[in-house]
Image (tube, rainbow, N blue to C red; front, top):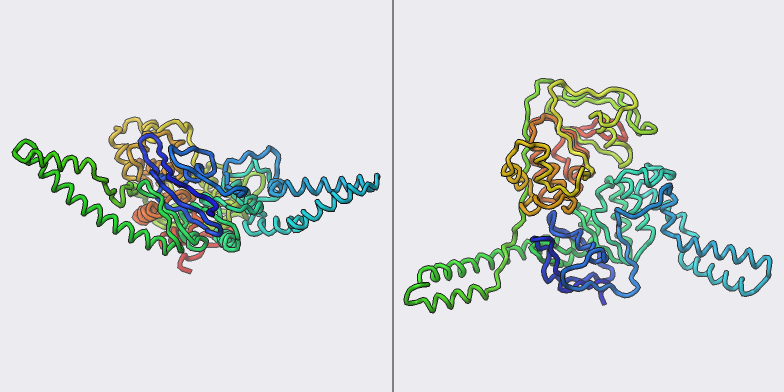
Length: 517
């Protein structure tokens, strides 16, 4: 019997159909990747199978007593709770049992009642069976594996950045050791070393997993089956990610052949109907019209809007585009040793290093968004900067993308804005939706579209690929390559910045090295 059985699932928002009559199963031991372009309903699928949203039709059945672990980015965490306190809540029931057992032993010492000793003994046996006495070791293993010491064990969760919070919620989920792990973009805030640790963890995880990710290298390393969400359908493929993509390619080719074949039949019938509707063959024309009305239409294999980006350039005459001299950054305390480097004209630089060491803070300090604790950062006088921040934060989440851009560029005609959004991969329906209802990838496309309305000669992008599908990542990479000016790119995805940047600044080692080395 499957752990999860999804049957005849249909879901849509407004006029956008996500899936219709979709069915699939998750079996014991399966590590299932979930792929599809931005906005096709991958995160919505997680919400449906966890009961957070109801589908229009269909059923979701979990095997009884299945312990489901879900990476909830919006978990309610009490104020004042520290990182280490939060991780211990993964074992709250065991600690409560241990407290009861200790109280029973204390009471037994006073009353000498044998029943207390027996009950305490049974609890101790259960604690032994559930490896309670290895809990601290396991917590330390996960802290080390995900690099949580960089955040600080006594750091209050309420004061953490979104990326730090995501990491500790992931850590707690792993410590809970559920029967099924549901992960939505788990690598977004992890660096290369910690992604490798998570891959090893999942490969040794006996339970089932369902993982949404646009990091295809990660999926190749941790999954043994894939579901592809596309064209209103959910299709399951067995095997590795690469094997699944080959199967998907063959399926799409077959669908294209069927679509083309049917279009020939439809066009021939429509020509006959137009020619003979009022003549002696009108009966035959009506018959063919009925045939067309009854025909089950084959969808074309691709109807998604493809993104294309083009960042307008403004000339600069300076040789040194940016000079950073002994810059010290941080909030209460410096996050890094003073940083010194320069970026010359037309140079593109990658900024790497463990999460939590201050890459985003360094960027914001260079831009003057956060006051530096010491040192200086100077752009050339002719620098025109276009900045992409990784946070998807909006002044009003009820505004549509069209309204957001119109508010910033009041003189722009709506047609120009719609054209730009469409070019960046956002269709007309999503351009008219509240921004808060769009997926992370769709919101990212809006932010990238905003960057295309003003010429610049220096792009600064902080984790721009976090929510993007592979096709959009490639379009963004090509646009940055085509941009004649400077760029600083913060990214945890080596596949994105390899071949894109001229040099890599490793924030931890505080050294510039050639990206070819």
